Amino acid sequence: MDATADTLIIFGATGDLARRMLLPSLYFLERDGLLDKRLRIVGAARSALDANGFRALVRDAFLERGEKLDDAWRSFEDRLGYCKLDAEARSDFEHLARMTGERNVYYLSLSPQHYRSACGNLHDAGLATPQSRIVVEKPIGHDLASCRAINACLANAFDESRIFRVDHYLGKETVQNLLALRFANVLFEPLWNRASIDHVQITVAESIGIEGRWGYYDSYGALRDMVQNHVLQLLCLVAMEPPARLDPDAVRDEKAKVLRSLRPIVAADVTEKTVRGQYIAGSMDGHDVPGYTREAGGAASGTETFVAVEAEVQNWRWENVPFYLRTGKRLGDRHTRIVIQFKCVPHSAFGQGDLIPNRLTITLQPEERISLQLMNKTPGLTTEGMRLSPLSLDLSLTEAFGAQRRRIAYERLLLDALAGNPTLFVRADEVEAAWSWIDGIAAAWQETGHAPEPYAAGSPGPAAADALAARKGYRRA
Ligand code: BG6
Image (cartoon, rainbow, N blue to C red; front, side):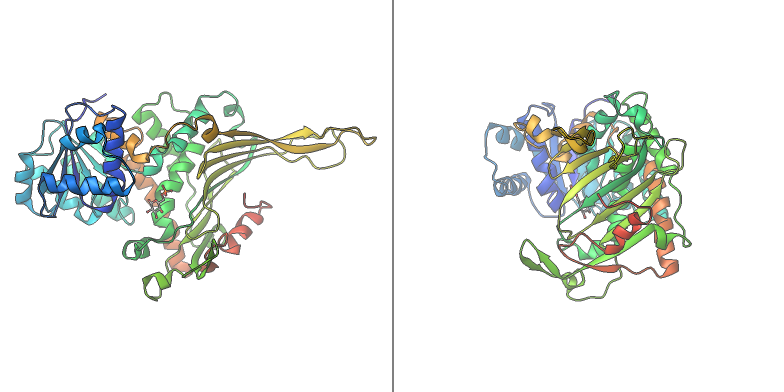
């Protein structure tokens, strides 16, 4: 593994992501003794602050979270420095150069429209050294062409092995546990294929709306905001072949193969394979909630806030196994869930009554829970032979590891970026393969004039999403 970084520079350090996620995550790493003693953290942003002003800003963000200013905080505060910097201004980078070390990590917590200038300026100021790394947040583009343009400007300054593209879902413990569940147990792998699995459902249901992000969200929509990255990453972890090792290339090679095996969705089948929805006014937890367009003061919009897709991974393992992908905002029940629906037994020796096929349900959010539905003998005596009923084997990870604090996904990602381990970051070919599939759907929607269906806030989403699965005789799980 690469040498540990000595300086972390956070661009956009006064912004929302840095204050809510990045800086608190770094503090938690400090508290757990996981930060290298020599690490310095430099906040870089346009606000006219000095190091003390920046420390005060970080301190306030902490207190707002209800954290206490303990000894760990004091050590953390000592690491913080500040550089007033505009990512577009070349001369500001000369100043930054005086504050950096030998092995720098540049974290671009900026709007992607500044990526090109930031990379160019880092390069021109001699800061894109072979020992440094760059971390970039999603969205990496709006489509394949803009994603390639961003990747090209990153590649101009940094080698691919030093570019860390964040998908924060990969930093979640529960998402990493998918790798453990699949590849650290002998139980599932022999059944994990078209011979035993009937279909798969992956749902990321959110109860929040667009949280004041209309400007960004309306030009992205659920397909680009969630499916292109988080949902497809979950699909990859479910569908990938076992990697030979848990090293960056072995894991990412397998994920990229899944993305390249996705059958393109075209205008001829987009109506049958996808559903778009947009929330209208409704009620959540007894409160009235405005519709999507009201959140932007009534502007009309054809952007989807819900999407369902029947995806196919065209390879030997998954041929003819549909993957139902769903995500939406303002849905009644918040959960992230993967359901592996197994096939029926080939022959029932039990006479009357249907055998209910096994089902593995992996709930990632809000609580991690794994449950396996099995058929059991119903206890008791009858004269009509053995009665059966389904029963679940339930594993609650919250109960098993309840005492452990739930970590912010960024803690893992920051630790790995500082240590130079890119396994949980997205490689250029992965993000491009994902865009290529997403572009096909977006183009097919446009070509067919496929408009979003309204659904009430607080509901499970458009009825058509149920119809999508029902077409093959399945129910939303
Ligand atoms: C972000 C999306 O990437 O992920 C948001 O832009 C979404 O729209 C969020 O709400 C969901 O993340 P989490 O961790 O809350 O499931």
